[in-house]
Length: 379
Image 1: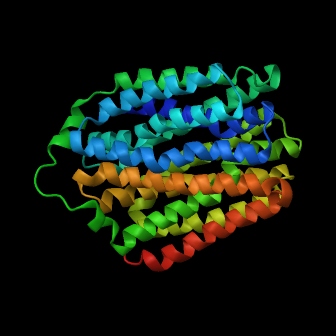
Image 2 (image 1 turned 90 degrees about the vertical axis):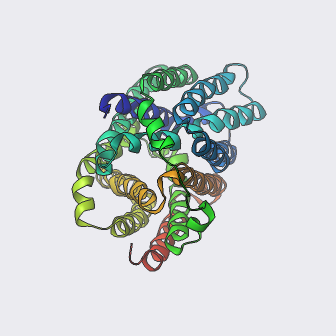
C-alpha cells in the first residue's frame, strides 16, 4: 500500500477544508457581506455536492478512470477558484463558488474508492491514512489564524490557491495501478443502484447523513464569526478549530479497535446523540473557554466516528462495481444537508441569535438519532 502517497493527498485535500471552513466566512465578512449573504454564498458549494459527485461517480464507475478524474478535478478546482482575483462582488463570487466546487467535489469520492482499492482486505486501516487529512486541517487553521491576526485577511485567496496547487501535485504522485485493479475486476452483473438504495437500512442511513450535515450548518458557517463576537482572537479561533480535529485524529487511531467491538449502527447512533448535545452546549456555553474546549473535543464523535462509520457502511452495503456511486451519494446528500444548514444558519443568525440557531442544529441531530435507532436495526 502506498501509505505516504495516499496520506499526502488527504493532507492537502483537508488542508483546503481547513482554509475554507474557518476562514471563508471571515473573508466574506471582510468583503462586507451580511450574514444572510454569507450563508447563501457558503450554501452554493454545498449545492454542488448534490450534483457533481453523482455525475463524477457515474463516470468513474463506468470508465474506471478514477485517478484521471481526481487529477482533472484538482486542476479545474484551482482554475475555477483563481477567478476570485478578477472581482469580488456578490454575483461574481456566486460564479466562483459554483465553478470551483463543481470540480472540487468530483475529487474525494473517487479518491476514497482508490484508497479502499489499495487497502484491499484491510479496510479498517482507512482511518490510519485518513488521519493525515486531519493533520493538514490543523496545520492550515493554526498557521492561517496567525497570519490573519498579523496581516489581515487580504492574502486569503493566494493562500487558498497554494493549497490547491498542493492537491494537484499530490494527485500526480499517487499510483494508478490499484485504481485500475479496483475498477477492471468489477466484471459480471452488478446490482442496480436503485435496488440498493431502496433497502431500508440504506435510505435510512442516507437520511441520517443529510440530517447530520444540516446540524453542522451553523458550526461550519458561523463558528469563527461567533467566536470573534465573543472576543476570541483569530489565532485562538484557529487553535480551537484544530483542537477539534486533533481529537478527531486520536479517534481515527482508535477506530480500528472500536469497530471490532461495536457495530456500525452503534457508532453512528453515538455520533448523532453526541452531536445533539454538542450543538446545545455551543449555543449556550461558548463564552467559557473550559466548556468550549470540551465542545471542540466532541468533534471526535460528530465528525471522526461518524465519517469512519459511514465509510464502513458504504463498503458493507455497496458491491465493488457500485462503490463510486455509493460514495457519490454520501457526498451529494451531505451537500444537500450542508446547504440547508448554511441557509437556515444565515437567515436565523442575525434575527434569532446563536442560541436558537444551534438549538435547531441540535434538533436535526436528535431526529437523525431517532430514525437511525429504528431504521438501522440489525446493521
